[in-house]
Image 1 (cartoon, rainbow, N blue to C red):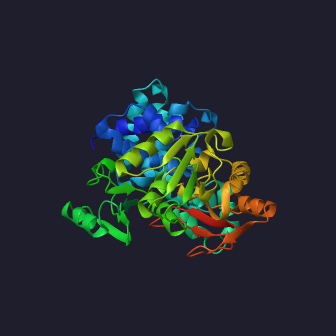
Image 2 (cartoon, rainbow, N blue to C red):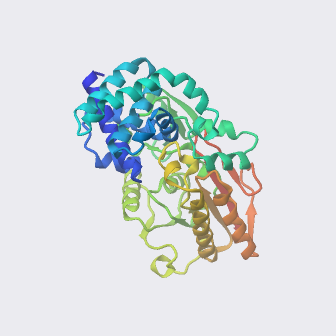
Image 3 (tube, rainbow, N blue to C red):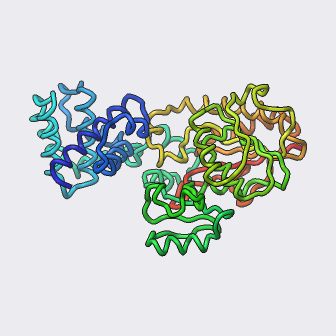
Amino acid sequence: MSLSSLGEVLRLSAVVLSEVMRGRSLTTAFVSVSIPDFLLSAVRATSYDVVRSLNYVMAAFSHCLDSTNSKLDPFFHSLMLVAFSKLETNQYCSYAIVDQTVNVVKKSKYRHLSGFANAVLRRYLRERDVLREALSKDDSLRYCLPDWWCQLLKKQYPDFWQELAKELLCHPPMSLRVNRRKVPLSEYVDILNKMHIDHSVIDQYSIILDRPCPQKDLPHYDDGYVSVQDYGAQKITSFINLNKGDRLLDACCGSGGKLCAVLESFDGLDVVAVDNDCVRLSRLREELKRLQLDATVIQADLFDLCQWWNGVPFDVIVLDVPCSGSGSVRRHICSKWHKRQEDLLNFSRIQSNMLLALWPLLKQGGQLLYVTCSLFDEENLIPLRFLVDRFTDAFVAHLPGQNGVWGVNLHPGPYSDGFFYAALTKK
């Protein structure tokens, strides 16, 4: 990368970070910032790096900051945080990073701060090793997590919370779901081999790519041969019991990744998919068309049954509830900074109300599969206890590979994000 390109990457990443600091997600921030195609990959990587370790770089910057300069313009502040992050991840280019950061400042309306920026960055280079050792004594800084996350992980996963915290700092895997209705796994593997796309087969229909690539570049993607889906989400087909002719409700179906996995795996289902978000439902309809699958898709408020339910009960209900997303934070790294601990109880109330609303719609002998991508008991166990305490016909069913009293905890790792699955049967 040329020096001028490095400077532009630093500048554009600072603009993106400024949007994130205002409460936007990275996805939304990228859309709102005009980034040339040839710099997009570098800006994306730089932005993700700084947001992933945001509390650490903020602490390092504060250490090097004169207290008299504590109130800084949002863009200048973001630029300095990007530079600190870049100095952490690219230690062999340190002086080029300092030089180009100062050049960006000189070309901006903050040119009067160029000397200050240079002094702060060079101080950091001098003190980096000592500072890193000092900051790493704080668990939240060492693992780049909010302090309340660390406290909950210690409480709920006392035997391996550190391993879990380390995993949350890693890049997420790119996993594929091969469409068994279109192509055998062995045939798609041959296609990948011929195109020299390195990968690993991890299940009878699941593949992990060694290096992520754009979805559109996957061979035969438009033909419906394959979908991008986290392996943990694909596991839904192992936890659901369906027979031909069964009536299935996918409540909060979103863009339909789990629903499409189910439709690829089971024949002859009568499926109703409900969500209140028109954008997500538009994506679902596109996916159903691409994969040549069929479902009745309805935009409605889940709690307003008159909008969407015809009074016929369901054999199976999948309730993939809104949650903190703590298990998938490697993909949505802003969420750990934008959400608060009290949000967990807000989600728990919503989840409990969803369970209460949907339980009467389930047939006797039917199954409700409760799904979150959360690591926390507040969202996984409390809503289930709430339901079981109020309905005498609700019983917890055992799932394959169950590793908890209530269900299956899939922990973030090299193959999967974090998920929680629990099954309730109506006696």
